[in-house]
View 1 (cartoon, rainbow, N blue to C red):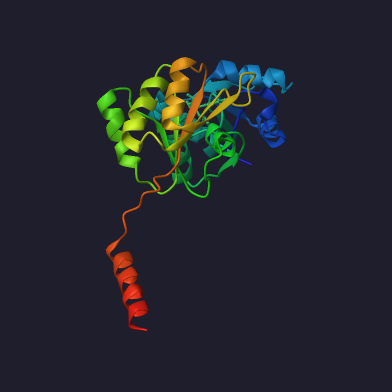
View 2: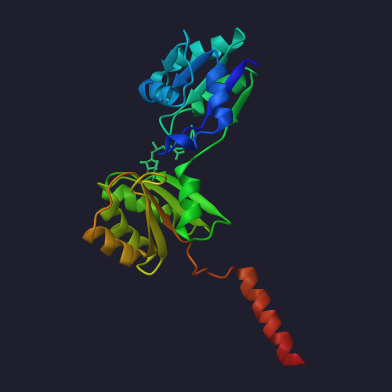
Amino acid sequence: QPGLYFVATPIGTARDITLRALDILASADIIAAEDTRSMKRLLEIHGVPLGDRPVVSYHDHSGEKSRARLVAHIAEGRSVAYASEAGTPLIADPGYHLSRAVAEEGFLVTSAPGPSAIVTALSLAGLPTDAFFFAGFLPNAKKARRAAMEAVADVPGTLVFYESPKRIGAMLIDAMEVFGAERQAAVARELTKKFEEVRRGTLQTLAESVANAPPKGEIVVLIERNQVKDASPEEIEAALIGALKRLSV
Ligand code: SAM
């Protein structure tokens, strides 16, 4: 069927690709990828023949023209599979503008879901998962990074950040100041890979641990929600009425 098929790819271990993702990659008329080399390698690992199908490069910033070309292929009845370099497309990765462009033309947009570092990290961190907020990558500059942290400090859910090994030390120090040194958190790195590791503790113990043994590789930082909640006027009123009622009996 013509349309755009988002395909999630592994975040470390090649065999984490789904059978359906392989089916789609085997049958799509055109394969578009953020990184054509890693896509070709993935197809090779799984023995998916490319035949004379092209693997075209696409990023959201590759511009209108290359997006319009993919939409035109779909309009002509072709299926386009799109994968980002790793994990789920659109999650801190390209695909958003393509998704909108194809949907706006009324064509099929669907996906073969699969790995994402957010969900993998959440399932291992030992922090509440009933509600969470993905804050993506923080800005590089200290001031902007702190402002971005402050903006999400009171989100009622676990906070999830993508981080780099270069910045993780500075990030945790800022986090201690913004969220409080005692806030529970986790640093998950190299998920699904040989050196997978999850460090759990307070922001302070994690900052110390990272300073003593800097983690290498790809990193997700998770921070527990703020437990200190200011009561709303309605809650205060309800509590006061409750107390008065108890007094009057
Ligand atoms: N689309 C991907 C996904 O669905 O997770 C994310 C792409 S984003 C450009 C790359 C970042 O995701 C890395 O810098 C790291 O923060 C995180 N990440 C990706 N793979 C990871 C892994 N195996 N372990 C830990 N973090 C990972």
